[in-house]
Length: 450
Figure 1: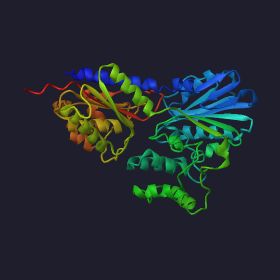
Figure 2: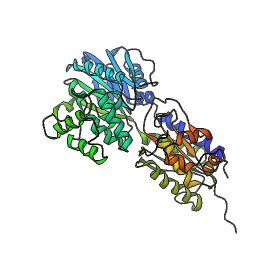
Figure 3: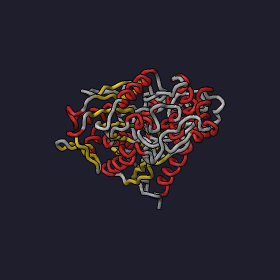
Figure 4: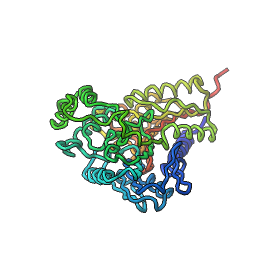
C-alpha cells in the first residue's frame, strides 16, 4: 500500500510539473520568435522594419511574465505599453508598465488601467502593431463600463453573477455588453492597426471570444443573451437599474452591438493560443508516469456544480480502487476544467476546496486514495489557497478536532476545515492561469484473499 504521505508528496510534485508546463514567459518564448527584422508567430510573420511603433497592452493574471517575455524577444522595438494584472501578480518589466488591480470584483485601479489601455490603442495607425497579451482574470482587470453605468454598478452585477453559480462564460457575456473594451471593442478602438493577440487560455475549449471577455475577438453573444442569463439565475430585477436598462436598450436595437464575426476590422487581427489546460494535463500525466503511476487523462472540460462533479470523480476513484477499472492501480487519473459553486452558506472557501471536501465524504474510510484539486493561478475563491486535498481519513481526522465535514460543506466553509488539518494547497501567486487541475491517485490494490 502506498502511504498517504507519499500520495500527497506525489500529487504536489505532479501539480508543480503541470504549473511549469504553462509558465507564461516560457510559453511566449516558445511561440514568439524574432529573426532579424521578422517577428514570427504560428504561420504569420511581421516585418518590424516597416512598423512605425509596437505597442504592448493586455490584461490577466499572467500579464507581467508575458510582457517580460515579449520584451526579451523584441528588445528595443517596443515603443510603449501597459498591462493590468491582479494585485500581487506584478513583476519586473523594462518598458511595459504593469498596473495592479482587484480580481474578481473590479476596482478603481482596474478602471484607471483600462482607460490607459484604451487611450494607448486609440492613437494607433495602420503602420503600428498592437500586441495584446490576454490571460485569465483579464475581464475583471479591464473594467471600463459604458457611459451611464458606474464602476460600483458593474461591481454589484459581477458579485451577483458569481454568487448565483453562473459559469465564467455567462458572467463574461453580461460584462461584455456593459463594457467599452470587451467583446472585440479593444480591437475596434485599435483599428486600423494590426493586432497580434497572444492568449493564455483559462476557458474550456479555448473560445477566443470568452477568454478575458475577448477584448480583441469578435463577439458571438448578444444583448438578448445577456438578459437571458440574468433571467436564468433570477437576478434580472435585482441588478442595478442602469445595467438592466442598458441591456434592454441593446436588446431592442437602441444601442450598437459588440463587433461580430465577419466584420472587416478582424481581417487585421491574429490570435494565437500559447498555453492551455490540456498542456497542463498532458504534463501532469507524464510526471505521474515518471513517478510510477499508470495514467489516464479524463478530460480538460470538467465543469458543473463543484460538489456534484466531486461526487462523480470520487465514485470513479472508488471504482478504480475496488475493481481496477478503467485503469489498474497504482494510477493517477488527471482532469481539468473549472467548476462553479452555488453559495448557500456564509463560509469561506473556493471551488477546488469545495470539491475536495465533497469528495472526502464519499471517500470516507477508503484506504490508499487521494483527491487533489487546485487552481493553476494559485487562488481558489477569496482565499490564499490554490485548493485542497482529501483522502479516506479526512472526515475522521476532522471529527477528531471537532469539525464535521458535512456541516462545513453545507455552509460552503471548506477553507477553515482544511486549514485545521493542514491540508490546504498553498502556492502563492503562480502568475499563470489555465483553470484547474484535479488529480485522483490510487495506490496499489491489496491482493484478493484466496
